[in-house]
Amino acid sequence: MATEFSHEANQSPATAERRAEILANPGFGDYFSDHMVTIDWEGDYKTGGTWYDARVHPYGPLTLDPASAVFHYGQEIFEGIKGYRHADGSVWTFRPEKNAARFANSARRLSLPELPAETFIESLRELVKADEAWVPTGDGEAFYFRPFMIATEAYLGVRPAKHVQYHVIGSPAGNYFGTPEPVDIWLSTTYARAGEGGTGAAKCGGNYAASMIAQTEGEKHGCKQVIFKDPHRGDAIEELGGMNVFFIFGKENKIVTPELTGTILEGVTRSSLIQLAKDRGMTVEERAITLTEWREGVANGDITEIFACGTAAVVAPIGKLKAEDFEIPAPTEHFGEISKSLREELVGIQTGVVEDRHGWMTRLI
Ligand SMILES: *Cc1c(COP(=O)(O)O)cnc(C)c1O
Image (cartoon, rainbow, N blue to C red; front, side):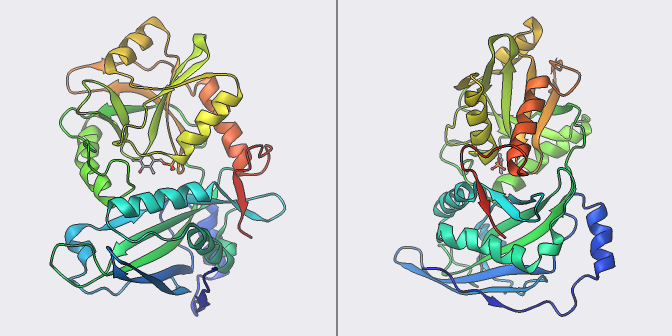
């Protein structure tokens, strides 16, 4: 059954001048549109519950009881998905059913209620309908949706909350990298992002909280991003704090990414790039890739390009790998040819200039 959303218009939205000023240089995650979506849930995690009071309302601070479970036990999950403006003015999103399914998986892992996929997709549509003027039109720009769910029950006992809220906020996003150059990344040998049986495969704030100390460590060594190893499998590489990783073996026309072991987050960008690489006739391997293979592959020229991927940055080339007591040089000084062309194809599909042959796009408005 379709969810009915009530609407309360923002009586003091940003002026057209202010909005234009923001859209001229949106950055990432700095500014938010005039409205947001909220849906409440009440129930019992074991026996189920009800989503109710779906509403579009003015963007603004939330009022929460200080005893709300999210503040104490971190029952929180989120998503990140973009809306793309096409040439005819319509706004589309990319594989939202994948994000909806992942959101449901994350919810299960964090003992939060599952939001039906139709409601998830409808909530994006409702927000963009209210704030269409906030969807940028520039090259590589998009409207970034941030859906999230928090435990709002005021109770300090430890058990799944009986009152939960789902929200969606939206933020105009600039071209993350104009012409990206490879960035050096830090290998954390002290800290893990996730562990076996943990929450690595769920998109939850706690994973990010746990990764920040490693990021700070990396920044001290001139690296903005951190890559983590699988603590249970020797020197196998997992992923970055918020992006999956790919290695291109140019001579063999092969692309390798760590397999999903339960500690890696299954990125929609990752899945889509695997498909695009297969479509090109590349060999795709999802398997363990170790530091030793990384080091030797770069040294003997088998590994020709390395990149990280995710919704926000799409495809971001990786340069050097730095660690406490060693370094692996960059396979290439510039954005590699194959990485760049995969990025262009994916962005082309998303922005409506390359044929959507897999039916990945959903029109929002
Ligand atoms: C969100 C996220 C990704 C990328 O997922 P996309 O669906 O491609 O945006 C990768 N790793 C982690 C840890 C993430 O949280």
